[in-house]
Image 1: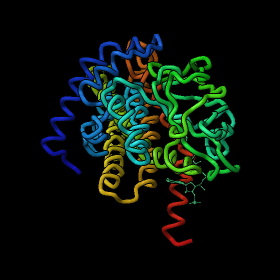
Image 2: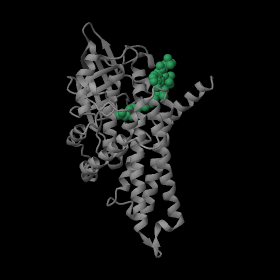
Image 3: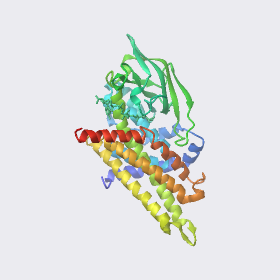
Image 4: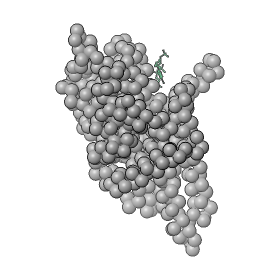
Length: 380
Ligand code: CAA
């Protein structure tokens, strides 16, 4: 775990080179123009990077979450938008692998894993973000179909996805009345609100998803009726590892950029890295990147080895994303006035880091998950 194997090293290096060549040249402009370039998805998919942890039987690379985290770190080092894109299109793949029928898997997973199709995860609503179990979108069962009505908010890939996993209420209030559904992007009755104008992650589209009497066949449900909240929570346990890995990539790039700048920039007759105030700031940044990665890899390793990992994934998410926020803010500080301007990428890193503390469960929610696991561990 402390040293990647030869195969992992080759995967990291190939991904790094690919991301620098393919995503690097347009990362700045994609951010500036809020451009979601579907050709990037096809290119990532052609490299196998859209289905890293999906088994080969369904078109993926069949690797573990450790390799998934390594790859996401590399994508995140170049483009946080695309790291989150790959993480989010991975969520339906996880859900199908863990809860889908063979028919559902064969219908959707190869396309998602190859990057030909794009996936999305629709849990949040205007009135239920952190309190996900309070969602109000309904799914009503008829003799031969389900009918879904409601609205989902802040949906990554809203309006551009081919498949939405939608959590809707099929029963009583609370978590046990929720079920999960596979909703094709072209389902009649599905429409989209305006694209959100975001501070960061601007190359990743976010929009409201509106379900106005969307009719689905009875086999569109994924998992058991009433089991949808568990489906969503299990997916988020995995997803939080990928968000944390994105943050590590982002923070690493910010640290390296700031260190290079500080080694070259001279003030008062010497490189500013040699002033203890700046050097120590960079030392703290490098340290935080290292310990964040260790925790991300630990969570991934636990998952790969079939051990309970939800609380460690939450710890990794809190640690890596809080660190990324601090590191990217400090990177701007190291560059001073230059850092605040768009000629350098550190201001983008800082804007992108902020959403990592919010997406896939705020860092306050992560602490709820950690505290509850702790309570269970001490037998209370
Ligand atoms: N795995 C499987 N099942 C789980 C679970 C898990 N990790 N956590 C909970 N459950 C199930 C349990 O079966 C539990 O039932 P039991 O009582 O029988 O054990 C049931 O769910 C209810 O659990 P809780 O009582 O813990 O539920 P809660 O209402 O108190 O909520 C919460 C807990 C942790 C705060 C949860 O609501 C939560 O995670 N909120 C944040 C939601 C979130 O992360 N949203 C992000 C949306 S996606 C996104 O950001 C963007 C994107 O595009 C991907």
